[in-house]
Image (cartoon, rainbow, N blue to C red; front, side):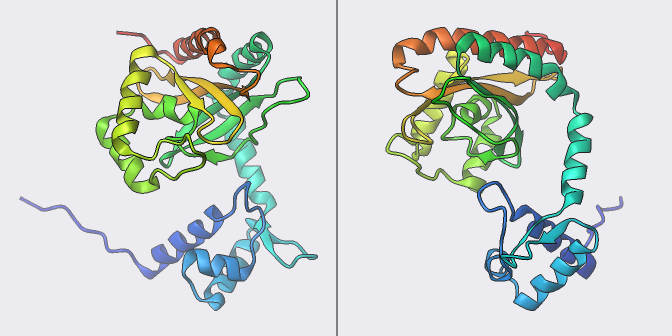
Length: 262
């Protein structure tokens, strides 16, 4: 019987991996980085970082701010992202529903998808109130500290939950952040039981969120929807009302994706 062939990473594949890691170093919180910043993040010599930057700039994947001399993602990344979003039917299905949910709740509504042990915001409708919550499209947040994240986390497999903890840890953001794995598992069981998650000022002080999961036709959790607002406008007594709204919307989106409850 023939055994499985082991493919050893070549120098070219390793270089490709480093180039991808360089691209992933940029985000909404650090849109521009210097060569020194990148060298430290990637544990690479500055000369190697220069080489990768030059190659990526040649394909418009990286550009340089002439004033700050720092680097940022290039126009090609925007073009690729725009193409992906135009061909992402889930977003088109969900948008009218989350817009309606924002109108009914009077608060900001976000749609996030599970990716690389985090949740990524792919769509949002902001409240029209002067004091409102904003989460830029494309921003990544932790699963354990956000409502939109915990709604996904709770419906992953036990192995996947442990992998999230292993890969991302349980960093503390506020005094309310769950940082103990045992406490997190208790929270997971509670979310599964009631069907929604709450971020009780666990990611940012003064912000409370209520979120529910969205499932695909294979009954896999793929996304979640959250209602977010200032804690003064979302007191604990209002959570029940908002949870009913967000659960109903998430169920409607799941049904549109072909999900059929057992």
